[in-house]
Amino acid sequence: MKCIIQIPCYNEAQTLPQTVADLPTSLPGVDIVEYLVIDDGSSDGTAEVARRLGVHHIVRHPRNLGLARAFRTGLDTCLQLGADIIVNTDADNQYVGADIALLVAPIVTGEAELVVGDRGVAHVEHFSPLKRVLQRLGSWVISQAAGVPVPDATSGFRAMTREVALHTLVLSPYSYTLETLIQAGAQRRLVRFVPVRTNPPTRPSRLMNNLPHYLANSTVTIVRAYAFYRPLRVFTTIGAISLLVGILIGVRFLVAYFSQGGAGHVQSLILAAVLLIAGFQTLLIGLVADLIGANRKIMEEVLVRLRQREDEDSLQRYPSKTQKVHER
Image (tube, helix red, strand yellow):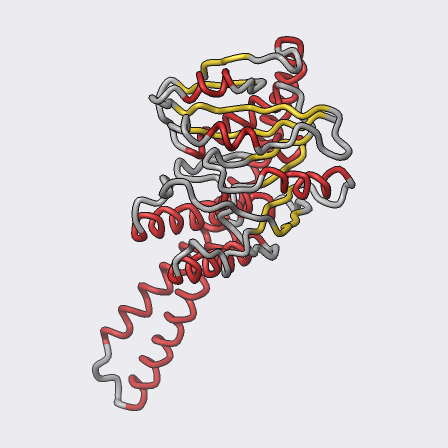
């Protein structure tokens, strides 16, 4: 069994040496452990540092494409390299490398397909009180969207099987953490969270410029992913609310019409009609979106089969335990 630990990087020449030094060289139940660095258009020589550190595989983006794209590139490369288990960790040494064994263990024993490190966001010392509250609120929202208990939705410290990686699609340009959890829930994957330790921060977060920026991007990601994987539920809920409000206003108009001899309240009639029409249209949109979703699932399965075919062809091109640099 082969495990590849991938590290998305953007200008991490200073923190990468400590991160790599803390990574395990062996794991229980795993035959081969290799490292992969995804250099997302760094300008500080991150790839050169990774090469000097003896990282087995290095992939370079010609320009900065963002964390979500770097994560996706890492998964594609790990699949091409024949990984059975893929572990993702941050380059800023936020997570304790020794805890990777905790992530991999449930996969080795067959108890999980996706394992996410739970930092205990309600008790992380270097999180501000507001950030702790927002992390817990965001995790609750993702729990509802994914249909599985999610104590730490934004944790990037995770391990997954080859099968999960093959079926993972990251459409958000912002981050992969929220979308992939909703996706895993929609696919009914075996998801587990295990407590992990964190190190003191080495630098400010690059994903969150400020609180409004973080909330806006996270909200868009959650709504888009939820509507993408559960369209009928989303549009049925919206349509039902519109219909219910329209019916209530219509009943109010009828009561007023007959009790007052048909005078006034024309505005209520117009508003009820608008809401009823909008509700029916939303329900129809939901049905169409659900049909599109069915076609999307077929296309995803075709894409998985293509990836599997590409993996078979590419395994011969990437010898194990050999340091390589690839441009993507």
